[in-house]
Length: 294
Image: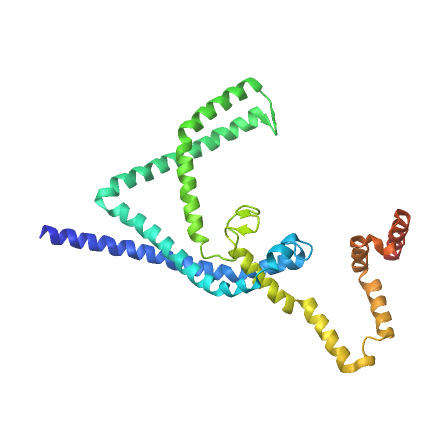
Protein backbone atom coordinates (compact mmCIF):
# COMPACT_ATOMS: atom_id res chain seq x y z
CA UNK A 1 0.00 0.00 0.00
CA UNK A 2 2.83 2.39 0.76
CA UNK A 3 4.41 1.69 -2.63
CA UNK A 4 1.08 2.26 -4.36
CA UNK A 5 0.60 5.58 -2.61
CA UNK A 6 4.15 6.60 -3.50
CA UNK A 7 3.60 5.59 -7.11
CA UNK A 8 0.33 7.51 -7.28
CA UNK A 9 2.05 10.57 -5.79
CA UNK A 10 4.88 10.31 -8.32
CA UNK A 11 2.40 9.93 -11.16
CA UNK A 12 0.46 13.00 -10.03
CA UNK A 13 3.65 15.08 -9.79
CA UNK A 14 4.75 13.90 -13.22
CA UNK A 15 1.40 14.84 -14.72
CA UNK A 16 1.54 18.29 -13.14
CA UNK A 17 5.09 18.82 -14.44
CA UNK A 18 4.11 17.63 -17.92
CA UNK A 19 1.11 19.96 -17.90
CA UNK A 20 3.24 22.94 -16.91
CA UNK A 21 5.86 22.10 -19.53
CA UNK A 22 3.19 21.68 -22.21
CA UNK A 23 1.63 25.04 -21.33
CA UNK A 24 4.98 26.84 -21.58
CA UNK A 25 5.84 25.04 -24.83
CA UNK A 26 2.48 26.05 -26.32
CA UNK A 27 2.97 29.68 -25.31
CA UNK A 28 6.44 29.73 -26.87
CA UNK A 29 5.17 28.20 -30.10
CA UNK A 30 2.28 30.66 -30.38
CA UNK A 31 4.46 33.64 -29.47
CA UNK A 32 7.22 32.77 -31.94
CA UNK A 33 4.71 32.18 -34.73
CA UNK A 34 2.94 35.45 -33.95
CA UNK A 35 6.20 37.45 -33.97
CA UNK A 36 7.68 35.94 -37.14
CA UNK A 37 5.62 37.85 -39.71
CA UNK A 38 6.07 41.32 -38.12
CA UNK A 39 9.79 40.61 -37.85
CA UNK A 40 10.06 39.80 -41.56
CA UNK A 41 8.06 42.91 -42.47
CA UNK A 42 10.26 45.06 -40.22
CA UNK A 43 13.42 43.62 -41.79
CA UNK A 44 12.03 44.30 -45.26
CA UNK A 45 11.27 47.92 -44.38
CA UNK A 46 14.75 48.32 -42.88
CA UNK A 47 16.25 47.21 -46.19
CA UNK A 48 14.02 49.65 -48.08
CA UNK A 49 14.77 52.58 -45.77
CA UNK A 50 18.50 51.96 -45.64
CA UNK A 51 18.63 51.02 -41.94
CA UNK A 52 20.11 47.72 -43.08
CA UNK A 53 22.61 48.51 -45.86
CA UNK A 54 22.00 46.58 -49.04
CA UNK A 55 23.25 47.88 -52.39
CA UNK A 56 26.28 49.69 -50.98
CA UNK A 57 27.12 47.06 -48.39
CA UNK A 58 29.96 44.55 -48.51
CA UNK A 59 27.58 41.95 -47.07
CA UNK A 60 25.43 42.20 -50.21
CA UNK A 61 28.38 41.19 -52.40
CA UNK A 62 30.04 38.60 -50.19
CA UNK A 63 27.23 37.26 -48.02
CA UNK A 64 23.73 37.92 -49.34
CA UNK A 65 24.33 37.30 -53.06
CA UNK A 66 26.24 34.06 -52.46
CA UNK A 67 24.67 30.56 -52.18
CA UNK A 68 21.08 31.65 -52.72
CA UNK A 69 20.03 28.01 -52.78
CA UNK A 70 20.27 28.12 -48.97
CA UNK A 71 16.91 29.87 -48.92
CA UNK A 72 15.27 26.49 -49.53
CA UNK A 73 16.23 25.63 -45.94
CA UNK A 74 14.12 28.41 -44.43
CA UNK A 75 10.82 26.51 -44.33
CA UNK A 76 12.32 23.42 -42.70
CA UNK A 77 14.36 25.54 -40.30
CA UNK A 78 11.25 27.46 -39.25
CA UNK A 79 9.30 24.25 -38.56
CA UNK A 80 11.94 22.25 -36.74
CA UNK A 81 13.43 25.28 -35.00
CA UNK A 82 10.04 26.17 -33.56
CA UNK A 83 9.44 22.54 -32.61
CA UNK A 84 12.78 22.14 -30.83
CA UNK A 85 12.51 25.56 -29.16
CA UNK A 86 9.09 24.72 -27.74
CA UNK A 87 10.34 21.29 -26.63
CA UNK A 88 13.40 22.73 -24.86
CA UNK A 89 11.35 25.38 -23.06
CA UNK A 90 8.78 22.76 -22.09
CA UNK A 91 11.49 20.47 -20.70
CA UNK A 92 13.07 23.32 -18.74
CA UNK A 93 9.78 24.49 -17.25
CA UNK A 94 8.44 21.00 -16.57
CA UNK A 95 11.78 19.80 -15.19
CA UNK A 96 12.00 22.76 -12.81
CA UNK A 97 8.43 22.14 -11.62
CA UNK A 98 9.14 18.42 -11.05
CA UNK A 99 12.38 19.13 -9.15
CA UNK A 100 10.47 21.64 -7.02
CA UNK A 101 7.88 18.97 -6.11
CA UNK A 102 10.25 15.98 -5.76
CA UNK A 103 11.24 15.34 -2.11
CA UNK A 104 14.85 14.49 -2.95
CA UNK A 105 15.60 17.82 -4.66
CA UNK A 106 12.89 19.97 -3.13
CA UNK A 107 15.08 21.24 -0.29
CA UNK A 108 17.93 22.16 -2.63
CA UNK A 109 15.66 23.94 -5.15
CA UNK A 110 13.89 25.85 -2.40
CA UNK A 111 17.28 26.87 -1.03
CA UNK A 112 18.35 28.20 -4.43
CA UNK A 113 15.03 30.02 -4.90
CA UNK A 114 15.32 31.45 -1.40
CA UNK A 115 18.84 32.70 -2.08
CA UNK A 116 17.70 34.32 -5.31
CA UNK A 117 14.77 35.94 -3.52
CA UNK A 118 17.14 37.24 -0.84
CA UNK A 119 19.40 38.56 -3.60
CA UNK A 120 16.45 40.43 -5.09
CA UNK A 121 15.67 42.01 -1.72
CA UNK A 122 19.31 43.08 -1.33
CA UNK A 123 19.30 44.55 -4.84
CA UNK A 124 16.13 46.55 -4.16
CA UNK A 125 17.63 48.00 -0.98
CA UNK A 126 20.91 48.67 -2.80
CA UNK A 127 19.07 50.55 -5.56
CA UNK A 128 17.44 52.94 -3.07
CA UNK A 129 20.70 53.48 -1.17
CA UNK A 130 22.69 54.03 -4.37
CA UNK A 131 20.18 56.55 -5.65
CA UNK A 132 20.80 58.68 -2.58
CA UNK A 133 24.58 58.29 -2.91
CA UNK A 134 24.55 59.16 -6.63
CA UNK A 135 22.67 62.40 -6.08
CA UNK A 136 24.82 63.47 -3.16
CA UNK A 137 28.30 62.31 -4.26
CA UNK A 138 28.33 62.41 -8.07
CA UNK A 139 27.63 64.88 -10.86
CA UNK A 140 27.69 63.04 -14.19
CA UNK A 141 31.29 61.73 -14.57
CA UNK A 142 32.64 63.76 -11.65
CA UNK A 143 32.66 63.30 -7.86
CA UNK A 144 31.39 66.02 -5.58
CA UNK A 145 32.99 64.39 -2.53
CA UNK A 146 36.08 62.49 -3.70
CA UNK A 147 37.10 60.97 -0.35
CA UNK A 148 33.76 59.52 0.64
CA UNK A 149 33.07 58.49 -2.99
CA UNK A 150 36.34 56.51 -3.07
CA UNK A 151 35.50 54.79 0.23
CA UNK A 152 32.05 53.87 -1.08
CA UNK A 153 33.60 52.51 -4.32
CA UNK A 154 35.98 50.26 -2.31
CA UNK A 155 33.06 48.98 -0.20
CA UNK A 156 31.01 48.24 -3.31
CA UNK A 157 33.91 46.35 -4.90
CA UNK A 158 34.26 44.17 -1.79
CA UNK A 159 30.50 43.64 -1.81
CA UNK A 160 30.53 42.62 -5.47
CA UNK A 161 33.27 40.01 -4.91
CA UNK A 162 31.02 38.09 -2.53
CA UNK A 163 27.75 38.46 -4.40
CA UNK A 164 28.81 38.32 -8.05
CA UNK A 165 28.66 34.51 -8.11
CA UNK A 166 24.88 34.80 -7.94
CA UNK A 167 24.90 37.40 -10.69
CA UNK A 168 26.84 34.97 -12.91
CA UNK A 169 24.38 32.16 -12.09
CA UNK A 170 21.46 34.42 -13.00
CA UNK A 171 23.26 35.46 -16.20
CA UNK A 172 23.82 31.81 -17.14
CA UNK A 173 20.13 31.04 -16.55
CA UNK A 174 19.07 34.05 -18.64
CA UNK A 175 21.39 33.05 -21.50
CA UNK A 176 20.01 29.48 -21.49
CA UNK A 177 16.40 30.74 -21.48
CA UNK A 178 17.06 33.30 -24.24
CA UNK A 179 18.84 30.67 -26.34
CA UNK A 180 15.88 28.31 -25.94
CA UNK A 181 13.38 31.02 -26.85
CA UNK A 182 15.33 32.21 -29.92
CA UNK A 183 16.15 28.73 -31.18
CA UNK A 184 13.11 28.85 -33.44
CA UNK A 185 13.50 32.53 -34.41
CA UNK A 186 15.52 32.01 -37.57
CA UNK A 187 14.62 35.55 -38.66
CA UNK A 188 16.34 37.30 -35.73
CA UNK A 189 20.10 37.33 -35.07
CA UNK A 190 20.97 35.95 -31.64
CA UNK A 191 24.49 37.40 -31.59
CA UNK A 192 25.51 41.03 -31.88
CA UNK A 193 26.74 42.35 -35.21
CA UNK A 194 30.12 40.82 -36.04
CA UNK A 195 29.98 38.21 -33.25
CA UNK A 196 30.30 34.61 -34.39
CA UNK A 197 31.71 35.53 -37.82
CA UNK A 198 35.17 34.26 -38.71
CA UNK A 199 35.89 35.30 -42.27
CA UNK A 200 33.61 33.29 -44.56
CA UNK A 201 32.50 31.11 -41.63
CA UNK A 202 29.38 32.23 -39.80
CA UNK A 203 28.38 30.23 -36.72
CA UNK A 204 24.70 31.22 -36.82
CA UNK A 205 23.90 31.88 -40.47
CA UNK A 206 20.12 31.39 -40.26
CA UNK A 207 19.35 35.14 -40.01
CA UNK A 208 21.54 35.68 -43.08
CA UNK A 209 19.65 32.94 -44.96
CA UNK A 210 16.33 34.53 -43.98
CA UNK A 211 17.56 37.91 -45.23
CA UNK A 212 18.55 36.27 -48.50
CA UNK A 213 14.96 35.05 -48.82
CA UNK A 214 13.69 38.58 -48.18
CA UNK A 215 16.07 40.11 -50.74
CA UNK A 216 15.08 37.54 -53.36
CA UNK A 217 11.44 38.57 -52.97
CA UNK A 218 12.42 42.24 -52.92
CA UNK A 219 14.31 41.80 -56.19
CA UNK A 220 11.04 40.74 -57.83
CA UNK A 221 8.30 42.44 -55.79
CA UNK A 222 9.82 45.75 -54.67
CA UNK A 223 7.52 48.70 -55.52
CA UNK A 224 10.25 50.27 -57.65
CA UNK A 225 10.72 47.03 -59.60
CA UNK A 226 6.97 46.69 -60.11
CA UNK A 227 6.72 50.31 -61.28
CA UNK A 228 9.68 49.87 -63.62
CA UNK A 229 8.13 46.70 -65.04
CA UNK A 230 4.85 48.54 -65.52
CA UNK A 231 6.66 51.27 -67.45
CA UNK A 232 8.38 48.71 -69.66
CA UNK A 233 5.08 46.98 -70.41
CA UNK A 234 3.42 50.30 -71.21
CA UNK A 235 6.31 51.13 -73.53
CA UNK A 236 5.87 47.80 -75.31
CA UNK A 237 2.11 48.32 -75.51
CA UNK A 238 2.01 51.92 -76.79
CA UNK A 239 5.45 52.18 -78.43
CA UNK A 240 6.16 55.79 -79.42
CA UNK A 241 2.94 57.01 -77.80
CA UNK A 242 4.29 56.42 -74.29
CA UNK A 243 7.07 58.29 -72.44
CA UNK A 244 7.84 60.67 -75.30
CA UNK A 245 9.61 64.02 -74.94
CA UNK A 246 6.44 65.89 -73.96
CA UNK A 247 5.69 63.39 -71.20
CA UNK A 248 9.25 63.66 -69.91
CA UNK A 249 8.99 67.47 -69.84
CA UNK A 250 5.76 67.31 -67.84
CA UNK A 251 7.39 64.81 -65.45
CA UNK A 252 10.33 67.17 -64.84
CA UNK A 253 7.95 70.08 -64.23
CA UNK A 254 5.95 67.95 -61.82
CA UNK A 255 9.04 66.85 -59.88
CA UNK A 256 10.60 70.31 -59.68
CA UNK A 257 7.35 72.02 -58.71
CA UNK A 258 5.76 69.57 -56.29
CA UNK A 259 8.69 67.46 -55.06
CA UNK A 260 11.78 69.69 -54.80
CA UNK A 261 13.15 67.57 -51.95
CA UNK A 262 13.55 64.68 -54.40
CA UNK A 263 15.72 66.80 -56.69
CA UNK A 264 17.69 68.13 -53.71
CA UNK A 265 18.32 64.62 -52.41
CA UNK A 266 19.76 63.58 -55.77
CA UNK A 267 22.03 66.62 -55.79
CA UNK A 268 23.26 65.93 -52.26
CA UNK A 269 23.94 62.24 -52.90
CA UNK A 270 25.48 62.98 -56.31
CA UNK A 271 27.49 66.22 -55.94
CA UNK A 272 29.16 65.61 -59.30
CA UNK A 273 25.77 66.42 -60.85
CA UNK A 274 26.84 70.10 -60.98
CA UNK A 275 30.46 69.37 -61.84
CA UNK A 276 33.61 68.25 -60.07
CA UNK A 277 34.89 71.64 -58.89
CA UNK A 278 33.94 73.09 -55.55
CA UNK A 279 32.86 76.35 -57.21
CA UNK A 280 30.41 74.57 -59.52
CA UNK A 281 28.97 72.56 -56.64
CA UNK A 282 28.42 75.67 -54.51
CA UNK A 283 26.81 77.49 -57.43
CA UNK A 284 24.58 74.51 -58.11
CA UNK A 285 23.41 74.26 -54.52
CA UNK A 286 22.83 78.01 -54.36
CA UNK A 287 20.64 77.90 -57.45
CA UNK A 288 18.80 74.92 -56.02
CA UNK A 289 18.07 76.77 -52.77
CA UNK A 290 16.76 79.74 -54.76
CA UNK A 291 14.44 77.43 -56.73
CA UNK A 292 13.09 75.90 -53.53
CA UNK A 293 12.50 79.30 -51.92
CA UNK A 294 10.60 80.47 -54.98
